[in-house]
Length: 163
Image 1: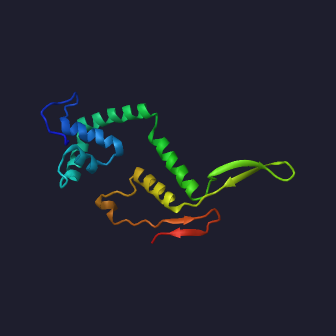
Image 2: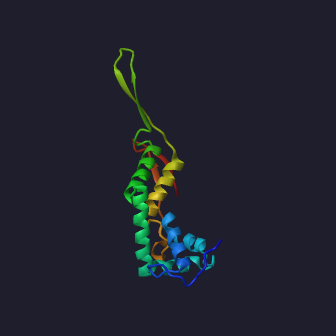
Image 3: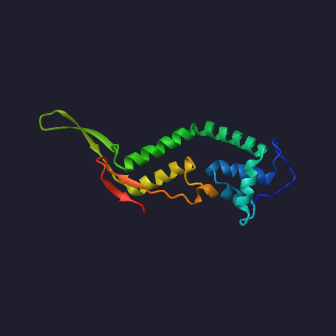
């Protein structure tokens, strides 16, 4: 059921739709999607989100919600970013996917490292990292900027290249 824009206000001076927007925003930090889920028009959701996010009382409420979320999950933005970097590094084969210890014929312990090349996961992890740092901004200043992605193996040999 869509949120209604009632006159009831929370302690931060927000109506029901604004509260719903904030609650949705902390899930994935996507303003347009949050505005749609809160009941704003699909046509104007992006513009609405931009305006809503600029308001000090919205920013204050989002800060509270984000702190609560971090406390509940005991996860920080750095934790998430580190995980994406680890996923990327494993997917590119720059760090081992798994390390086991076995014995050779003479009974000596031998460390066995398994590497994996998974370009789809590497690309997705890089995309997530780029989004975190706002590399792929929709702003007019960034719109005409092109990035060339080159993936190389540990020896520097190109294994995939985007044009």
